Amino acid sequence: MSQSYPPFLSKKNKYPKILNLNTIIVVLIYFSVFTSLTTLANAQNATNSTEINTLFNSSLILYNQQKYDEALQNLDKALQIDPNYTDALNSKGNVLKELCRQ
Image (cartoon, rainbow, N blue to C red; front, side, top):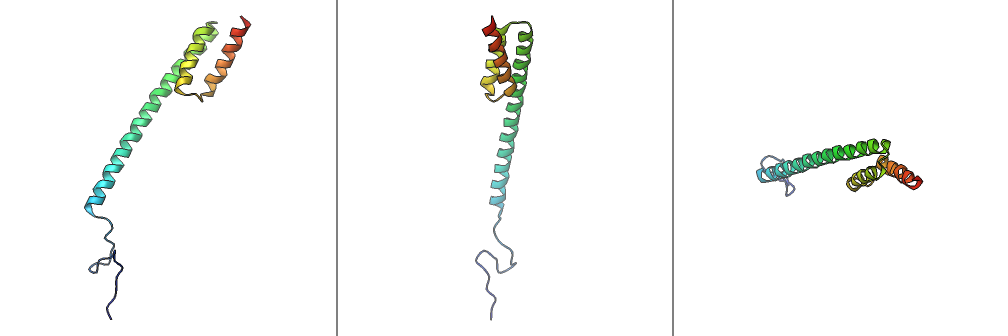
């Protein structure tokens, strides 16, 4: 009685023939592209983060100088980049409150 093997096993070495050289190359290419895209996205996020912080900090300085219109412009620019930036949203409320008092 001969032993039968599932179709994906080789009769010679009994190990699956799932991975071949082409599959390995394709996986490595996909991994390389994914890594590059992730690195690019992280760099873009870091650039946006720096820009947001610069705009926010300058708006605080302008607010303290009572230059509310200019502070509001910087906060709006920061919120265009990240609409969920809570510090900028809070500061925008403070600026708008001061503008209503004038």
